[in-house]
Length: 444
Image: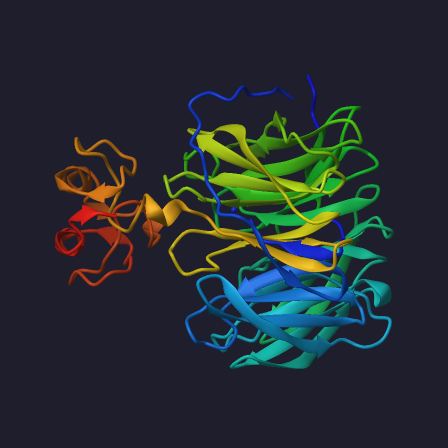
């Protein structure tokens, strides 16, 4: 059994246990890559509509000189020139996320400053950023993830501190960070909040490189509640949380990497306990970061990983929880930071990845919207799954979905409109969704 992780790099590219064979897996598809020039050694990358114009923007952390470059979107996946946010000489901006830290409805930027062992918030006012709260971390933070860790309604953050053998949980109160550092593992590479029990409380999964172990820390106490050794061949790196098998709970995806062999490992969640990683080779060398998104809009979660030493990205299609590497796409040298977002506004998630040693930001746009659209949830016979058109089959499928969405969550299959038929999920499938479908009949 082969059981096979987020590191820094110098330019950006935008794209979408047991080994599992590739059978009948969907094929996410992306257009040719384009690139943005960045300063030296770009690392973290984040995407959001920072200036409120309805278009996706990009932010990239660069090491020389220390700053975050914000590229405002101009439409169709194109971006304007970089607008710099200087973080201070020698700070070493690295991992980066976009999140509403102060609760004003606008996405802020939160960045790891690896050279001074800190995390800083840059508050956003219609695309203009100002330095806000800062808190200390353990030694050499190398990753950053966002979630409501303390369940108080605002976004908190967590770092993995490689040289400190620790994680730091940064709880947030109206944009002000408070830090608590907890020792865990040997050279941790990523810390991922994940609601394993489905109770709204966040556990934290940690990939620990040198002891080849994934730890799960209990919500609240942060005591170790599970440790899973991934075997003697590979080391755990990047992590992501997503419902990979469609059973309604969050699973953990881990990148497992070695100089000779790399894979993704899916750790299925069973009643709050993670199983051993079921692995699929990445086809790349020294894989590091991973993101999960429905790139082909077929209703299940696909994956993408960066492969640092082979200078490419691997896309994994998903069919019922079965993954296969469906596409390998060249990037710049040493790809690392990775984000999935709808960059061109066509409704499907695209990919951006920073390539440390090429000093650029490259973009790869998903083609999925050409074959799928809102309301296309079934084939002509009403069987679930998009077929490229909205037809009577989609109405048949809706009949079986009438009622609240699982967990009352807007955006479930069939929840495409409110009770009046206005597009946009409202947490249930009702007559309003039928009204909306009437206006969508025809090819996507």
